[in-house]
Image (tube, rainbow, N blue to C red):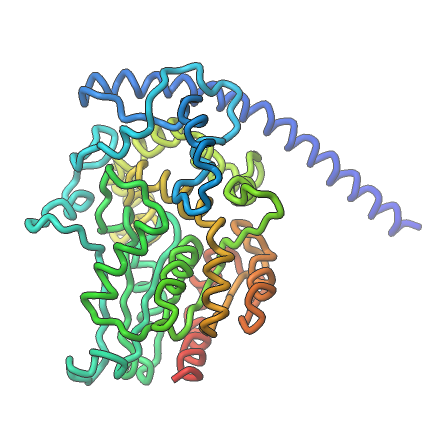
Length: 428
């Protein structure tokens, strides 16, 4: 009887806490809706004052109506979430045509950082944009052995607000000597992140990311055969790349993949509501929703944090008495608001409508798919792995106990390396 009473009390506490969180969330996000609309006007005025022209935004009702005309086009690269995010105050500001985004120049905007590290990609004399790639060559093998299929090429793609250091600091040092004698490792800074280009005249669609990887990695390194390892957002790009090169990809490992399914037509909006629901709790979810739903408030945060990253890094070094900050703290600011905003919507959300097509292509090509996910992942849906297996029956899914979205890699590097080496060895 006492056990029943305890369970009853816990159930009511959960219901009460859910009501409180939902009520508080509704009030807070209503205020944020209004605040974002105000900052829409603010940024229009200050952009015109400093840069001589407005940068355009996705707040205009006009733009939403234009997008509705293109909805029937299933190949439309732009995500509907750019226009259809719920905001009661949408349209009260100035109407600015979003097409102006395509005409932005390469100059650094006043709200972005212009330090040497952040704009180093602009120093390319040839003018051809190339991604930053970290290559770890095969041990004791001649350069000629790298061409064709003699070497096992492994391409690593990082997640959102990260860079190639996510792999060079975790997986690279822990691979066995035997693996290093057979595999060449290529870790890529995706377009808009790390040391890679961050152009303002790019909409950072899935196709943009894939084409940059092709021109910066696949073609220059003559990758006729390769494996892919991807984490989080990188999984969407990895599937697109693998589907396009299904006859060259030997295996693909998806770590914490953000795979969202929906019976509704607009899976992009479903992905936004799943990955960045408008809730105050947990805090990580609130941060994701704040930056994903509010274009102008997100730009404010990027101005404060990213533009002044050297100041914040200096403060952290003083507080921690550590000259070498953790690579994740550094990577967090290595982007512009424009690159992060469009990648979030056009890759994580917009890419969701293409995921099934990618998986079907890989299933037909019989590409080996390996999914690894943590049991405590609060970022991507827990059912992602099983849903992928339903789409690709031969896919292998591994659920790691007590691992979250980050600790699925960090903290279990040796175990992950063993899993990867077994996969590559079984295919070789």
